[in-house]
Length: 268
Image 1: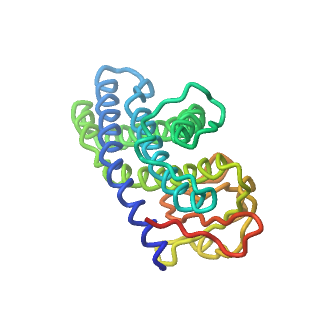
Image 2 (image 1 turned 135 degrees about the horizontal axis):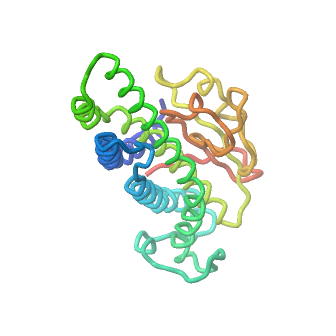
Image 3 (image 1 turned 120 degrees about the horizontal axis):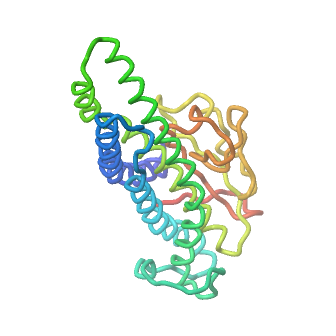
């Protein structure tokens, strides 16, 4: 892997580890609630998802702030001579239209990300919740078949190891959030951009992602075709891509201004 790849993975790892802990806590709360529902004979599908929604909201907005600012200052600012200060992240703007003052841009990005999350969270949280309910139901069926009591099964539900699942969700969502933040930042620049899919060149990368051409740039709003599926960016599941194309993905995007010969690398 080259230097920009290593820098990207370093940022990715920071976000992933930070939010894996919060996701694990939210999942643990859900499993405890499902245990309570099971113990009282109620439908475990009634479990509350608000805790996980709050984690998703915080995760995507923080990454939007950080990656949006980094993308702008690394790629757009050298062209426009308009750099964004991190203090602007906490400024609020009343308008939902693209601001004329670059100092208000990060607040604008927050609004864009919030709009995206209004539908995305419903979709993703629904998937996470249904998977959890399915796994608990399978556990109940299996343990009852082995002769365990409901009290024993309730305790098993409470003690399910959720670390691997939390890490997987955090890694997958970090890739998606970083990619989406970069796209939002460039779309708001008023300039025309192209993007390329940059796979991590190691033994953890899917063959289909490894085979993508890092020198093949397409318009920013177009979709990549990977393994016969459409993705706007690494981690994107909004175009119908399956988990086989998104789970645990660590690929990144590279960008260049339309008409430019070489791509930009995002570095700290």
